[in-house]
Length: 214
Length: 265
Image (cartoon, rainbow over all chains, first blue to last red; front, side, top):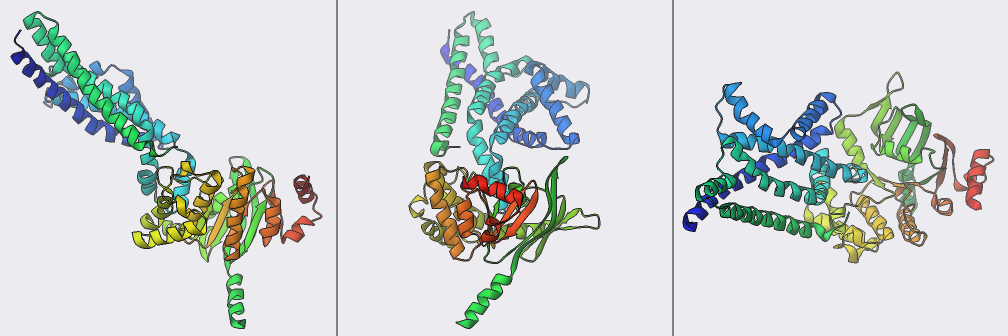
């Protein structure tokens, strides 16, 4: 086996996996925050569609969603879509739903008195959210968000089912070509390294926010 | 000398808070009915009464934390809400509501300090963000307030590092940082251990000496009797008594006597 060929090939797949990961987070986190806020809306015209979205995204396989977004735009809407783009849309909508529920739990866990104190002090609703509620929510959602992020690193492997060349696809290709499971083991090590970094970042953030309690 | 006294008297005549025909219900349950009272500048009013008598709701209505059903509330001459022809409260516009909010301070039973800010920032955040004051003037005022309330060495501490009594004093300082015209206390010592209530009551007493207008919902009868200019006794959503401590404590009203007797035992 020629490692000087295999390793760069797997690294190429790793770069795609990292791009999927980063772009998904970039879109899913703000989406989750917006959805969490809308989910709390009193009007059923906002509330109900949001609940339906949350059910749909969390109630069907991510694999199915990937395939849906790969084939729905070109064949039904007649819009051509790049595989990578389809994967980003599916991942973002799916993870946005999970993040929304994590954030909603975090927002609900902040005592009502915090917002009341802010209101009495004259803070606007936006100032209350951005300066009082959100910073406290971030601290509370770190453990659950770390879970989501580590799962996302691994879930990027699913993108290969719609033909995105990423780490897992690269490993599989190499395994069948070389008739060896070593490339799969190397890919496993790569995933592990990526997730060690994710875990380290979150535990650092947790430590940084441990200066206060409550 | 005389003119100075005269000035003070004039100031004392000014009505800071005027509440009339106020009512509030939560669904079917009526919690306040036909509430009428005024608070004049420099007055200390204690509101007493059994749990569920509507004391806290009254404070929350005036502080815009609950929606008034009917009645009129005026703060420093500005109308918070007023009855229409059908006795339904109509609120003033958002800008007036905001201005009124800044004239009123509220100290909560559970302090509600912001845990992610240190004590100094708890005091300075609202004046800088809401009033747009400069960091320097805000910081100077905060330091002055903290040393006045005996918390000068706690400026950089976080709320969780303080005792309950210190937290409540910090919460009072936070409310004072906006220079309110009137300060409300919602059972300020009820969440404190008995040995810590004294330090909070001492602060309220010193504010009274400075002529701060205050409305205090409290279960501390001795404190109410000693400090308040006027005591309002509420029961089942109604004001039963509104008079000087001597008047209220010597009242013939059966409900009042019954309530006060339990505290004397």
